[in-house]
Image (tube, rainbow, N blue to C red; front, side, top):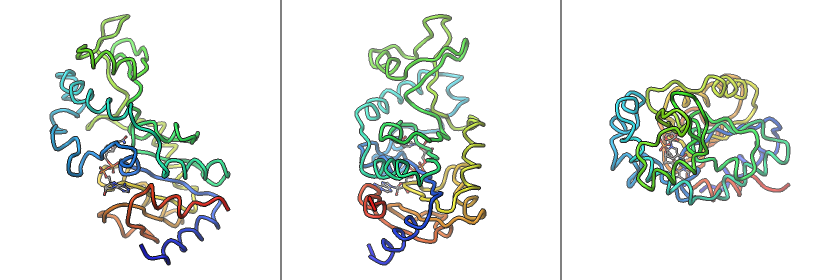
Length: 248
Ligand code: NAD
């Protein structure tokens, strides 16, 4: 990777005190959670339109939970990597106003970030569709692994749903409006590990840009929205972030 771009990114980070991050599945790939679209990803084996739509879930929740069992095993084994840790360091230094994430794996929180905005929910929480009782995802995933598919509420017998947002399900309003606030008030956005294909989330870097922010894009491959970036760093997030977010 050209040293010039690394230096440029370092300088932007050093000069900014209102940095935000927008992350996608790619930041967690080096933690052992494959992104869904790449080779070997979940969508190669499960058609998302069959297994991961909200309507599909209402019709037959067992399909989602069958796929979900596989995903849970991977997520529960994962640990934050050096990219998550670098963002936690930035927050500790008082320079990060928020991490907006499309991820559902809880790894930003586990790395130490407190201001995390989850646009697509969290796979490690679940709730009853009928009485809204909340459940710790890990407990539910263990039940599912033991063949309890779909899992039902122990209070009212309603079906349980993961808090992860499915295709066709509205995004959590509060999270979206917090994310918009962060985008409007940032002067530098780090966009990390996202193909920028899932809307409306993928519009957020453009919003930050339109509000006057500079944008650094860290991704393994090109995206359809690379033109939003002032600096493009092509490569693995866990290798690049520690090089541009340093202790100084
Ligand atoms: P995506 O799968 O569409 O794109 C991921 C991008 O990351 C790709 O462009 C890929 O080239 C890049 N990438 C892969 N490995 C990388 C690495 N080591 N470093 C840097 N970049 C890397 O992911 P998305 O844009 O987040 O959208 C997919 C949706 O799937 C999201 O809505 C998210 O909720 C969900 N998802 C979440 C997780 C998770 O929580 N870890 C995992 C898979 C998918």
